[in-house]
Length: 125
Image 1 (tube, helix red, strand yellow):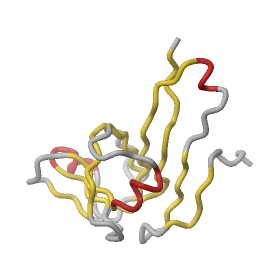
Image 2 (cartoon, rainbow, N blue to C red; image 1 turned 180 degrees about the horizontal axis):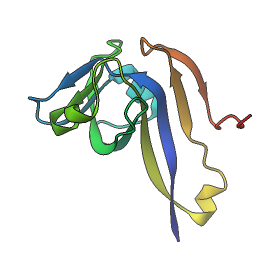
Image 3 (cartoon, one colour; image 1 turned 45 degrees about the vertical axis):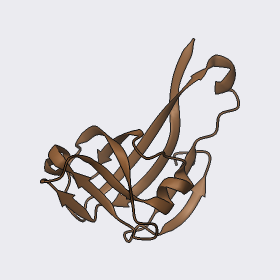
């Protein structure tokens, strides 16, 4: 049996660019990709906190340290600069692997600076 679990999350990333006339994808600061363990060209899901849009695309590497989160191509209709988004990647695991899996959760401020990382979602209060 395969189960799909959260692999990595960039929580409350701030969209810096929205480029309609681009081939597609989402450009993400390379340092953020590395910390989250998201590979270039890996499928990602993006959830827009402002308008509720949810869409799937793939990650491309922006310059390290640039703090860029650029929603490109057709997806540019779903997010504007300044929108806060959650960017997630998922992984297929066996039932045995599920017991030891720990996602990488990266929490960002409004400038896409890392404010916290953890491996569990905090309990809901």
